[in-house]
Amino acid sequence: MAKQEIITAEQKKIARIARAMGHPVRIYVLQLLSKQSCCYSGDLSESLPIAKSTLSQHLKELKSAGLIQGETEPPKVKYCLNRENWELAKNIFGNLLGD
Image (cartoon, helix red, strand yellow):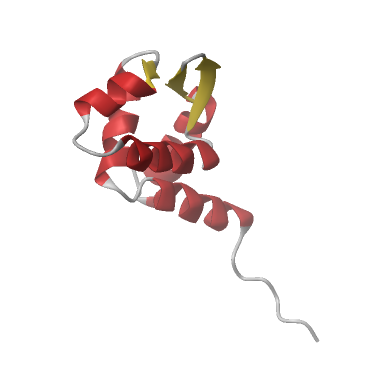
């Protein structure tokens, strides 16, 4: 007899989003993008005291979790919040924390 799966798809989604948000640089990026429509990666690299390659990895993690989306406008990449997933994340964490 197979064990019943106790971890739900929603719990996995919460963990994925939480992992993506688990670094101060990523929180900074999310807060910045939540206050403006979009931002270019070059502008982000100028405002953060980290290497461009490190910023790229943080952006990749946020994008992979579906929290942001990027649009290439050579030679730059424009990043914006994925508004639908951002609202979903806010609702998930509000419910989880009893908001």
